[in-house]
Length: 133
Image (cartoon, rainbow, N blue to C red):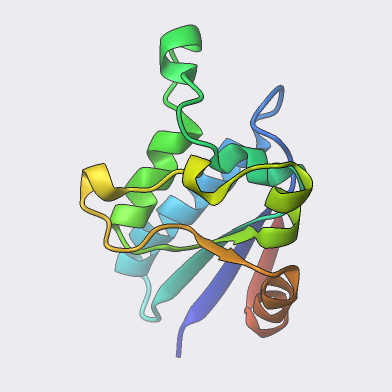
């Protein structure tokens, strides 16, 4: 038995802490997993304007001196966290898949999973806990 937690990010990475909170909460699931008897399996899903968090080279470290969401996503990809990105939303915003973050430089074997919204809805139905950011 495990605890599946789906973190749905709907907001862009600008003027709000919510997108970064989602990924840091998802990261903390691995720590919780150590302290409880049942495994915790986090999944991140980026939908709506939240897909803007997944564009690489946004330079928040250079401009604002902040650890970037991009770096957090790369770390999670290198740790094999399941990260979904809504296909319809990246198409709506004119974002090409090659502009999305990947974790290859950190040794990630898989990248972001660009999926139809229907698949994200399916994840919402089967998860044990659902959190919106």
